[in-house]
Each structure stands twice: as C-alpha cells, then as structure tokens.
Length: 132
Image (cartoon, rainbow, N blue to C red; front, side, top):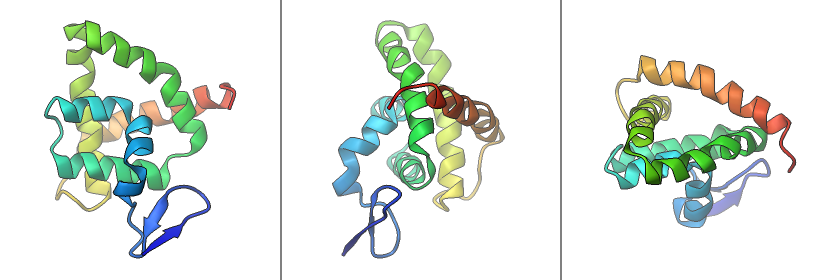
C-alpha cells in the first residue's frame, strides 16, 4: 500500500520510498550517483539507500542547486576520464555514508561525511539563487 507524503515522494506503508513509482525522478535527482552505479559503484543496495535518503531528506532547493552544477559535470564525465576519476570516489564515499544513515551498511565513511558537510550546504545555497 502506498501513501503520499505531502513533502515529497510516494512512500510504502512502512515509510520507505516506493522505488517503482519514483525510479525515474530519483535517478533524475541523483545524476552522478546513478552514473556511478551504472559504472559498477556502488552496489545496488547502497545506491538504492542513497536514492531513498535523497527522496526522504533532500529539499527541493538543494536538489535544484545540485542540478545547476551536476548536469554540466556529468556531461564532462562522459567526455573526460579525468572528470570521472575525480567524481566517482566522491560519489562512492557519499553513497556509503548515506547507506549507513539509512541502516543498510554497518559502517559509514568519514570522507562521505566530509563530502556531505561541504556539498549539501553548497547545493542548497546555489538552489536558493536558482529559479524554480
């Protein structure tokens, strides 16, 4: 059974994100992590936890800000192995930390925490100045 959370995604009765319903929008909001997953990092459980965390916790403002820089960066990643080598570990660290926050893995990542402390506020600030 599904229930609608007025603040965001469709949730299952147990409060978890309904992946079947939100697969396309979740992938759209997690551009770099989805790219990383398609490259084999992280594993499926960690990737799904990353998406669930984002659907449950990320503000639309932060997601808008993320898209401002992530969409051009992903285009660069498609053309440049160096851009990919820079971002894939960062995405992996963050995904590991989010999977830990969601209770999917037994340990987090201090690098992932650092990435979150820097990138999430940055995305939010960018999003504040990005039109809806």
